[in-house]
Image 1 (cartoon, rainbow, N blue to C red):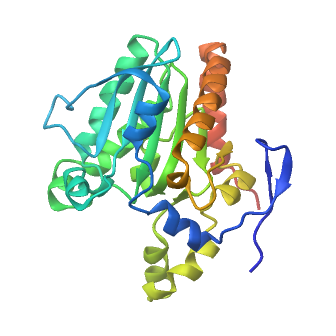
Image 2 (cartoon, rainbow, N blue to C red):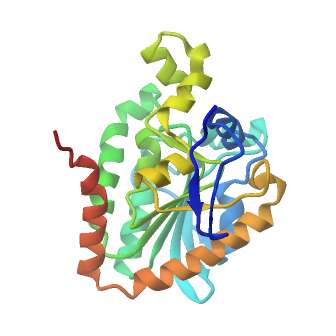
Length: 282
């Protein structure tokens, strides 16, 4: 099968990915894949986790708080999965309830108040679709985040570290820079869901994954994301320090660049970045 080539800025040459889209879906979903908290604890110092949406409860599928990136105070937010069944049950398998998104927004508004850059880590198959979540306004919570993030007067960087599923991922990814780890995926729905809708056959998920253009290489070429962060062969779980250290360096450089921008310039560039996806011509 033909696999798209792409320019890898980390090594300065055009490369061809070694894995198919379906292979990358499997890697992105691995239970051993590093979690948001692992990246937060490795990259940042002095992390203080903050809890609750000040309305309903604390959603453990979303973690966030204050930390330092070197000497720069930042707000960090992540969608958290677990490595064991018990951890995943506690974290609702990384599928946030509306209060999780409202907690994230509370922390982002706090960051804006104190002029702290925001860094988010996304890893979710999608927002939780249970009855209770819908009753408490899941759709409104996601839409509110999209609306508010578009106008936050601080720099925002979002990193897809595993699965980036649907609006549940986008609710933390309206950012000035959107990056993906090399073996992560980002899509409107799962390949299984796509195959079920298009062909009424979820067993064709592997075929769907190739058609959906959900890999980091595909999305970089289309301009949906801005950077691909390399991983060790087979996934970041095989050499976590390699990917985490590389990501830290990229974040340090990018935060320095973004914080030097005038706020109105930053907001205009963010608006233009997302507005271009709605510009279609005959």
